[in-house]
Length: 312
Length: 258
Image (cartoon, rainbow over all chains, first blue to last red):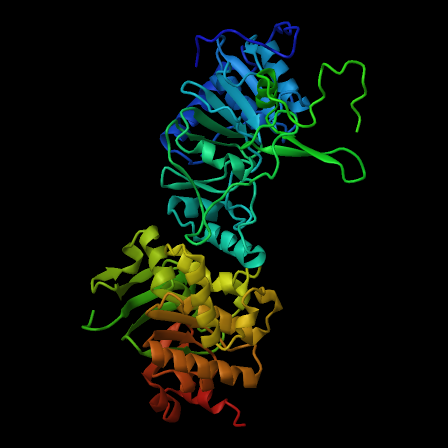
């Protein structure tokens, strides 16, 4: 997964020193081979959950142990890594994982979506369209889309094997019956390549259309549940729906308060206890790039107003 | 298999280790026919039903079934995928305990619609309209369509189970003690409903019951089982009015006249 793009603009200004005593990218080579075999099988059968022998990682379950193992198995010395957590490059989880690979693999890191060859993500797909040659690695907490409808693993495997997905639609039916619309807004189930129904990890359903026919390779790792699955480039990914209640994504009434971006996923930020709030891009890199290009949102603290307080 | 028969069992035997579940049971059912299997607890009637519904593999014997296209298939030679499709389209199973036959955490409408969605219906409005139609056919207030079965009475749950099973217009319905555990007036209404639907839809039914009154009311033919064997078969009225075997005589005479 190498790329000609070697330029990095990292936010971690000082590159971490390479740790000695560890194998490249932490995992030993036998483990990586085992995980790569699972990944290859996953790519061969899009959307199928491949069991793998998940290892203990130096981080707690729920922090992305599955994604880290997948990243460690696909990353090479010439790769450029970007890690996002809820779209943001600078939260604890993202910073820690980026540092982890900088120290154990010595790879270049970046916050720029375009410059990255491997992007590990928790709960978002970058706004910037991905390109061929890029790998998107998802951290998955619960890989089984049928889990909360059917608790037995033996039974869910049979349902997948026989493509019996009526149950998934029962869940959507219940949503419409109760709320008048499909209320599921994240981890929205998708059908991959016309066969397997897959949980796209807890990304907002806003991101589902980005998976469809994506030129990038999408890999999903669930460490605690010991499953890997994949969506190869240019694969059909269809969100489940009813003919008379078609799938729709969230819409936002106002643009990003910092970069005035529209058609992007926005986070709500509470400003005070008097109802003050702002909506900003969840994808921090996208927002920064737009601001660098001169886009100005309504609440952007303007650098020219020197010394002035910007508090509301 | 005889011309026109829907399902035929030949020499069905199920052993649990050395213990006998049922031995050498043979019968056939024609479309629109209701067969009652009666006998005391432990006589093997539930074992027989489990084997018929392919929940358990028989130790010996075979079951042939005439598919909708007229071809005859041996049930236990079908692969699991086809068997499951058959179960949820062409067959119904009404269980004694409605909690096993229903999804208790899914609304009544979702319960009825599940089979439709399983066979590929993807239009919410049509699913809902069909569910409403079936709820009214089994005499459940359509206003309860979004309520969960947990809020339903025992009789309503059984009727919901019937709607859920019949929505795909199956040709064969297996019933395991559908009326036990209900009080007498509710039982009577439920039996009435089942009798009406069976006649209207031309269903073939295998009903397992220990209640001879249920057998007399619903069934055309009857099979008396004891210790895993069929000891007497015949037309229901004939067997109940003029039982030949001593055990059947005992069974008939044990019924309390109201």
